[in-house]
Structures are given as structure tokens and as C-alpha cells.
Amino acid sequence: MKWRALRPLELVHFVDEPRFSLEDWLAGMRELLANGARPVAMFAQDEPGGGHRVWTVLAPNAAGRLCLTNTVFPPGEKRSYPTLSVDFPSMNYFECELYEQTGIEPEGHAWLRPVRSGNHWRKDGTPYIFYRVEGEEVHEVAVGPVHAGVIEPGHFRFQCHGEEILHLEIHLGYQHRGVEKLLPRQNRAQQLVLVESIAGDSVIAHATAFCSAMEALAGVAPSLRELTLRGIAAELERVAMHLSTLSGIATDIGFALPAAAFGALRTAVINLSAEICGSRFGRGWIIPGGVRFDLDDALLEKAKRILTDVLTKFPDVEALLFNSASALARLEETGAITIEQARAAGLVGLAARACGIASDARADFPYGIYRYSSIPSLTLESGDVYARAKLRALEIHDSIQFIFEQLDNLPASKPPHPIREMASNAFTIALTESHRGEVAHVLVTDASGKISQVKIKAPSFHNWQGLALAVRETGISDFPLCNKSFDLSYADHDL
View 1 (tube, rainbow, N blue to C red):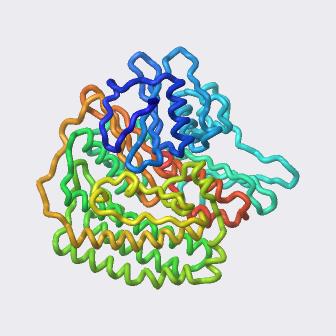
View 2 (cartoon, rainbow, N blue to C red):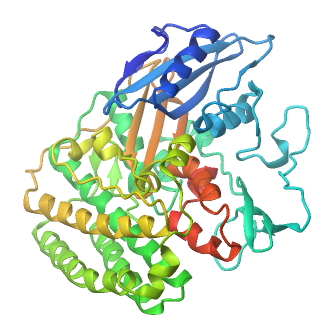
């Protein structure tokens, strides 16, 4: 066996883990990927005598299980390996990131490019050159990284023939904050502030992953009530962000009435979060060991009243968008991705579910309250803007119903479980499902039990490639709508 089975939140005492040869490491990954596995995380750990130990986590088709494998690249030797991405495109970006961070080169990689470091990524100083499509009447359109309004920075390089997009290259990393390197240097309180700043619209998803990993390393289990409150927080975040995206989609097709109505409903949801924890985006709600804010009887009734009002009004607004022939003409068959493309690119979350792939960490790797109370994980098959929009509407219904179930069955309070010491020379991986898809946090401890390394992977890391695929052979005027239907984050990609 060239890998070993691993469960999320299981401790890995890396000192005792067998080290596979480069050949076995590659053969193990090839076997898993050929059988439908997708990459979840890939990171390098500094070796005491120099060099790197590279760990790879993959998710096979079997739900609830991960596969872990590793190999060592010693110092002073040729630091390279035959690329996997030519045969398995889902490994493409993971290999680019590993090279950018360590200089370990995937030989034969078809499109080695920077992930976050711009022109400083090549170890020999060679600048990066954007891909170009040659041909008569082919022209290039460059957009960003500076955009109008308050949008985050990202550069889009279109190769077009007339209005038709032949190729889109997405270049990010303009707001790389070095979160992974900063986290181990901070005290616990400041670490959580940084985690909540990874992406302002995914505060709960990232904070829950980070805190869950800390709890696993410390052997601490939050109470059922605290897990329930985390689930409520996560679904409130999902509902708010799906409403925001639907508002943006309506705006991009010039449909002002549902755009404004979706926005108003979102405001009601995020204001409810503010009532509970003091932040409309859930900052400060999730803490290591549990939650900082609970629901008393008054807040419980207020939450039910607000969510009942949202659920009552939402179907009428939803009907405005999805029963309009002119709106459907803009949404249907626009920016479509096939299930084969989605699998090859390793898409996760809603972008994958819109192509018919059941990808949802709440169901595949149940965590927290989702181990005891399931939530539907729906799929559509058309893979277009319509599917990505309609799935959001369906998930809003399911998430609010899930919240009602939890509010009606809140377990009794129990004393908190503070985190003190964590296991030494170990790491664990925590998975959560944000409104975009799978969030992964790997926390590594040193000999004293302190966090020495962090690896964070957000769903946008997978799904930006999906946007590039979606706009091929579409008109360039459809790009804003396709972009909004994915609603990806520059921040949680750039870290």
C-alpha cells in the first residue's frame, strides 16, 4: 500500500509515519486519481537536515475517508518529479503552488504558472509570460487587476475572436497577505482574528475548520449545543451569501426588482447574525472549544420570527427571477461546464453540484452537528449559470429549514472546554463546507505542542479554473454573469 486511510480530524504523528519512495508516492497518487480521487491538500514540511517532506491528501470516491501519502525531497539533489497534471488536470494548480513555495519542479508540466507571487515565482528569475492564441483577427482583452468600485484585485486576460472567448487566463495573488506564515507567529487570540480575515464572507466556515483542528489536536470535544450553534451560524452564512449572489446575478442581467429584494432579504439575515454575536459576518462567534455567544429565549424567538419572514417572502422573489422568460434566456445554456470537465478540473462545492457531481463536505465528511442531523445535498446537471443560480435558491430553502430544526431542538448547555495543551509533532486536517465549497485547514504542531505550520485550502483554489472553462466559446459580454454565478473569492485564494 502506497498510502494510508485517514479520517478528517484524525491525528497524524508525522515522526512515526512511513516515508514512501518517490516512485511509490507517484504510483500511489496515480492509482488513486485514476480511480476518481481528487486532491484535497498538498503541502511541504521542512526537514530537520534540509529538504522537504511533501504530504498529499486525496479524497477517493468512498465518502468519509481520505488517503494520505508522502515522500521526501532531500537537499542537494535534483528536486523534481514527473508531473501528474498532464494526465490528471485536477493536480495542475497544486503542483504550481508546490513549485512556487519550494522550488520542487513537476517535470513536463504543460502550464507551470504563478499562484500568488507574480513575476517572482521562477527560481531562476525568468518572468512569467501569459498564454497567447495566435491567428488572424484574434485579439487580447486585459481586465484588471484594478477594477471599478470596491471589487477585489484580479487580472483576467481574454483571447478573443471577435466577441467569442477562445481562452481566459486568470491571474491572482495581488493581495497575498501571507496568512499561512503569519498564523504560527501569533498568540491564539490573534490567530483567530487572522483566520476570520481569510475571506470576509466565509468567516464561519474558516473559523470552524481552524477551531475544529485545534480541538482535535487538544483532545477537546465541544458540547452538542455548541456544535448545534456552529451549524446554525454556518447555515446563516450560507443563506446570506446565496442571497447576495442571487442579487448580483439579477443585477448583471439588468433585473432590478429581484436584485433589490434579494439584497433586502440578505440584510435581514446578516442583521440576525449581528443580533447574536455583534458582527453581521459572524466574527467572534466561533472560538476554540466551542462558541462565544449563545441564544437565550428572546433571541431564539427573534431568530425564528426573522427567518420565517425571509422564508415567506423568498418564494415570490425567487419566482420573479426564475419564472421570467427574458431572465431564463440569459441564464440557461450560458457558461456551461460538462460533468467531465468538472471532474477533470477537480471542482468542489456548488460549482461541482451544478454539474451533477455530489460534492459536499457536510455529507461526504460529516462534521459537527451534521454528524447527527443531515441536510440535503442537491445536484443539477446542466452546469450553466441557471444551475448555479437555481441551486442557490434550493439551498436557501433547505438551510433555513435546517436552522428551524436546530432552533426547535437546542440541546442543554454544558460547561465550556477550554483548549490548553495540544499534541506534539502531529498534524490534522479539518474540512468544512462553505457556501462555495470545501474548506480545508491543516494544522501542524512542533515538539512543544505549538502550531508550527498551517496549510489552508479554500474552494476558490479549485474553482477559478471552472470559471475559465465556463466562458470558453461564449461572448465576452457574458463574462460578468458567468463570474457572478461562481461568485469566487480573490481573498481566500490569495491568503
